[in-house]
Image 1 (tube, rainbow, N blue to C red):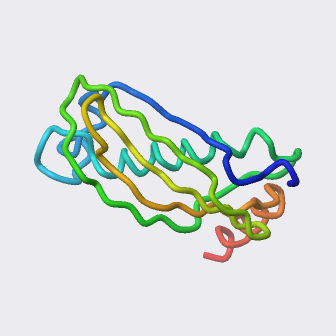
Image 2: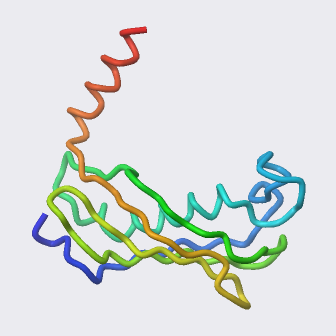
Length: 132
């Protein structure tokens, strides 16, 4: 994981469609870019910054997210989520995340991802599922 250093960046862009709206997702009654979608795109931006650099068998999972949704974005407008790796503390990766539409910043915050061993993680999840 020596390649994971502060300064790495990732992005995720899309044009807001009906399926990305609060009214469609049930997170509000208006047809604007939904907060859950913004969060997803911020996580995807962070993932794209680091996961391609991980050794085989490793992956990252979301651990903590603290964001503000600052402004509404209508259907048809492009949004871009950006993530910058700001700190590496063992297996914990801290990011500054932001989201912009074509006119302004619409979201900002921090996100932490944890590096995991994918096989061991899958075993724990399977064991938990069979314990029901």
